[in-house]
Length: 164
Length: 369
Image 1 (cartoon, rainbow over the protein chains, first blue to last red):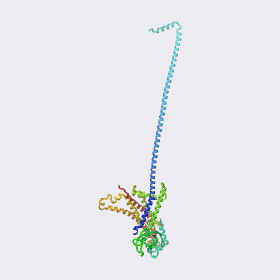
Image 2: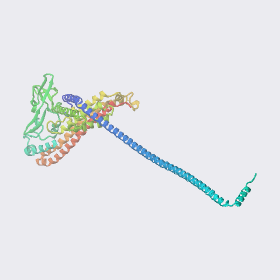
Image 3: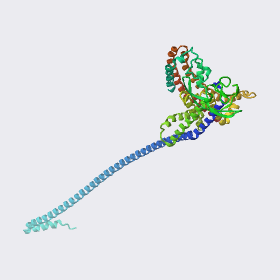
Image 4: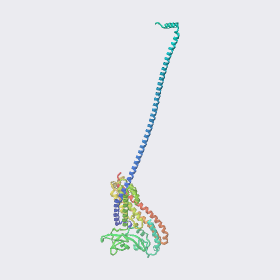
C-alpha cells in the first residue's frame, strides 16, 4: 500500500523544487531559447522572402534586358532597312539624275549637231549660191560675147517680165 | 547500458564471491550479503523474497543504499528532518536509524500503517505519532539533483543561444534543439493552437524534460540515478497538480461553460438533475488523476518487471544453485530487453504526460467557435 500512498514531506519538497525549477528555467532558459529560436525562424523566413524578391527582381531585370536587346535589335533592323532604303533611293535618284543629264547632254549634243549641220548646210548653200552665181557669171560671160545672143537674152528676159 | 553493465557485474560478483551463501536455500543461519533488505534484521534470516527485493528498490527511503558487501551495507546517509508536537523540529543523519535503532524517540516502522516511515515511539517502543516528516529522502535527493542538473543544462543551452546568435546550434544546443522544437511544435502548437501555445510552452518544456530526465535516471542503477522518482505516486501527483492548477487557472469562459452548460446536450440532462455537468466536473479532476496514475504505473511497472526478471536468478538459485546458473543468462537477456524497452518507455511517458497536459491546456484556452 505504501507504493500508492502519497507522502506529504515528499510532496512538499517536490512542489517546492519543481516550482523553483519552473521559475528558473522559464526565466533563464526557455524564454531566451524560445526567443532565439523564433528570431532565427523569422530571420530565415525573412531571408527566404528577400531571396525570392531578389530572384524576382533579377528575373524582371533580365526580362527588361531582353526587352531592351530586342528593342535594340528591332531598331538596328529598322535603321538598316532605312539605310538600305536611303541607299536605294540615292542610287535611284542618282540614276534618274544621270539619265536626265544624259538626256540633256544628248539633247544638247543633238541641238549643237543640228546647229552645226544647219550652219554647214547654210555655208554649203552660200557656197553653192556663190558658185552658181560664179558659174552663171561665167556662162553669161560666155553667152554674151556676141550681140545677138545678148539681144536674145534681153528679149527673153523682157518676155518673162509680165507687165501687170 | 549502465543497468546492463551492472547486471553483468552483479551476476559475476554473485557467482564468484557469494555463490554458496546466496544459493543456499537450507542454510538459515547464514547471512545473505546480496539481500537488499538486510537492514531489516528479521528478514535477513529468511530466504530470498522477490517481493521485498523489488519493493525495496522502487520505494523511497531515508538513506541512499549503494551496495552491500558481506553483510555490511554501504549507503549515503541523508538528513532526516522532523517536526513533532512534543519535540519540535529535529534533524539528524539517517544512519542513526539504521538496523531499526531508535534515536530521540524516533524509529522506522516495520509494520502497520506507517511501514518504512519514521514514527515517534515512547520509552516502551510503542507507537505515539507520525511526526511531520520533511526529510531529505532518496527521492528528494534525486529530485534536487535532477533540478540542479536541469537548470545547469538548460541555462547553459540558453547561454549558447545568446552567444551564438544567428548561428547554427552546436554541442549541447544541437542535442536539445530537436527536443525543444518537438515539444514546441508537435506538442504545444498542435494541441493548444497557434494562438495560445506560447503561454504554455515553457511549462510543457519543463515537465517534459523533468520527466524524461528522471525516467532515464531511474534506469541508471548507480548514484545519482536509481531512485524511482517518476515511479513515485507523490512525484507524479505533484506534476499532475501543476497541470491541474494551470488548466483551472487559465481556463476561459468557454471552458467553464463547456463544463457547466455543455452545448449539444439535451436540456433534460442538465435540468433539473445536472447529470452532464456533474460528469464534466468530475472529469476535471479525473484528468490530472489519470495523468498521475499513468506515469506512476508505467514507470513502476517497468521497474518491477526488470527487477522481477532479475529476481528469477535468485528464486531459482535458492532452489538449486545450478538451476540459478542455468536461468541467469535467460534472465539477463530478458532484463536487458526490458531495460531497452524501458528506455523507449521513458521517452513515451514523458511525451504522453506532456501532450495530455497540452491537450488539457488546449481545452482550457479554446475559444468559442
